[in-house]
Length: 430
Ligand code: AOS
Ligand code: ZN
Ligand code: ZN
Image: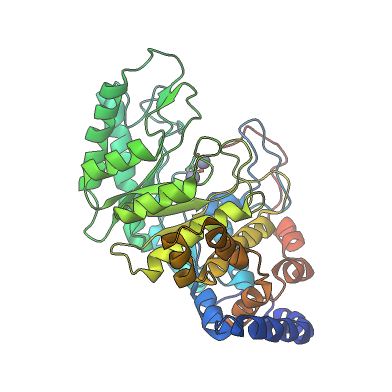
């Protein structure tokens, strides 16, 4: 496997940090032992954890208002994959990339697959894009795509989703994520039911094109770019459509796509119970679909979501096989650093959830001991599991201190040399 950061630099950095890590790890191990937890078993679980990186997250995207290009931004999917491989080399829990078409322009998918293979990367869900027009496109998505009142426009959107499936097959992907921007901006602008009927008709055509081992992930979002109503606005409409389509259709939860203060962990629990949880777009949010770094604002919420996920693992729930992906976009940080941080934060939530004393929790729930139930969760959440994460990384060949090692490597500056900036800041992508 080709690595873009010098392996001996990683080894050197790890060597100097190892004595302190070992000390912290042994200390945490002894502490966990008192609660009957074997740290080695937890570290092995942590080392198996994976979350996919979004190809669009490697560019210095920004907001819909402006784009501020960063140094050495990837100019195409091949360079995006290079950056993803650096992320994975450092954190070793991001082996897959989720591509977005046609943002990721590809002329030869077999070549792309080979390029990714060489970097030790695979592909997670492929994303279609019918929320903006592309140059030369025949029918406009201004008034919607899969739900457009014009049948030819709907057909065009269906055809794009089907071509994404075809491309994904070559890449080794097994899922299509469909997020549409369809909705309305004025009361009365669209007939809610007729619009959703059109969605279902179009979505059925896409669904029917899925290979046997594929899934269709439906992603809901409350608002934006439509601000009065959105067709797939919440998990209710999402799961109703997924049920209508069939068992290969499931509901994808993007953490930033809910009304403020919504109990997302409970939505996750419901979707698990009815075998309809597709997976996640992890990110964090203060106001809406902010796409901020995972765990940067609400680490407890993210932990509570993982508490549901680990509980499902613990209960061996049928049909439980969620896809974990990041969905974030930045203006102010180096995207490689942000994506490494996010991956680690998601993994941190997972590890903390593994440490919840589930039998004790069930006991407190059954005896209605609310305070002890809450304290049981908090006891796991308040543990500092950083030594477990670092040990899992180093055993998988990654860096004890990903950001420090990445900075030391000078990768970004070298990318700046190889990938000269186009020098202008055009309008952004949502
Ligand atoms: C849009 O808000 C959604 O989060 C989608 O997942 C979208 O495809 C992605 O964020 C890229 O913009
Ligand atoms: Zn998303
Ligand atoms: Zn979003």
